[in-house]
Structures are given as structure tokens and as C-alpha cells.
Length: 286
View 1 (spheres, rainbow, N blue to C red):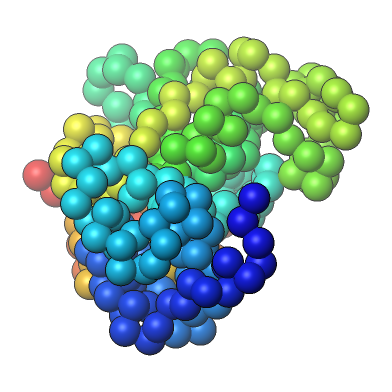
View 2 (cartoon, helix red, strand yellow):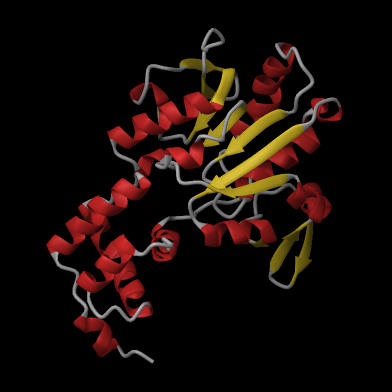
């Protein structure tokens, strides 16, 4: 077992931090401000210890040149924040069933499934909330097939999402009838039912990698909430263009309450529905 004394010998210098920050930004689009220094240093030391690298220099060399990319994925998993819960900012889910979906089906000219993409997935609360809202509050679910795809860069959190085990805090805002219908209590945790877990497809996607996002096309609605706050202006603009390509003409994207597409890109129209402000790819877009 490694001691605290061994841990203390590993020092992340200012130059090390800058090198790592630039590298991680290029690989993920996530930019760490100096205020996140303690957070970053602590996790770098964790991985240096876990890999027996001995120093930042040795670890960073391995990180950059490892052919499998396994260590970059491990590091990414612990560097990303996954704070969420069921029905978070639920006014957007109300907007989905009361305003966006009725408009989408009104203009549909085929019977292809309605496609919804949630990114980042985190531990699954958001896409599963979408599924519950559709089942409980959207009459169109009896007529239309819906595909829900949820993606994240963190492979560990995706495994957790697929399992569907949640704490009492995570489900505290779920209405009692929904909780009884879709969850089984197991000790201090709640297990999501199999039917709802099967309703969501979870995939690993790095938004900064065009090869990852290229297959994601023809979505009617995208939820990308509280992710772009971790990007800088360049990465935000690139993400906005990626989502634009992923949406069908007339499709909608929902951002977090502190995010504004109008400050990022001019590609989208602002739509002010009674429940929420969302952003739309123009119908005439090609």
C-alpha cells in the first residue's frame, strides 16, 4: 500500500499543469481553469500512483503515446463531473411533451421513429426521465415509436447508467406514483425497472472527436444540459455545429439554464415556448 509520504513526493508543477491542461483540452474540448487546479492535481496524482509511473513526466509520456488509449479513458472518467438527479430542470421535459413533440409530429411526413439524444448521459437520470415523461404525459407514445440514445465520454458512468441503481437523493423529486411504478427499493437504493432501462441506448461519445459524432444524425430533439459550461468559446462553437449537423431540419436542442445558444452560434432560431426557451434548427436548413 502506498503511504501518504509517497503521495507527497509527487508534485504537479505549474508547467506540468499547463501541459496537461492543453493536452486534455485538445483531446476532450474540456478546459480547466486555474481555479480547478486542486481538483486536477489530485486526480493526476491518483492516476500516477495507480499506474506506478512515479512522476508526472513519466505518466504524461505514457498517457500521450499509449496505443490503446486506455489510460486516457481512465483519466477522463475521473476528471469529468457527473452531478445530476431525476427530473432536474423539469420544465424542459414539460416543454418536450407539451410543445416540442406536438410540433414535430405535426410536420412529420413519414412513420420513422422520433429520435432523442441526451448528451452527456451522466448516470442516466436525464434520459430515463425523458422516457418516464413520454410514458406518463405524452399521448403520442401510443402512436409513435421513440428512440432515446444517451451518450457520455465517461465509460464508468455509462456502466452505472445501464445498471439503473440510484440513491434516495437521486430520486427525491420523482412523484410517488412514478416511483412505485418504475422503481424497486433495495435497501438504501432504488432499482429502475427493466422495461425503462431497455428504453434507452447508452453509447460512448467524445464530443471533440468528429469520428465519434459523425454517425449521430437525424435527431428530432437533443438535450445537452450543463456540458458547454466546461468548454471555452472555440469548443462551444464546434459543439454547436456538431449538434446542428446531428439535428433534422426543425429539430430542437435544450441547454442548461445558465447556457445560451445565442451567445455561441447564429445557426439556430430561439423558440420561446410557454414552458421553456429552446433552440431550433431552421426548417429550411439542408
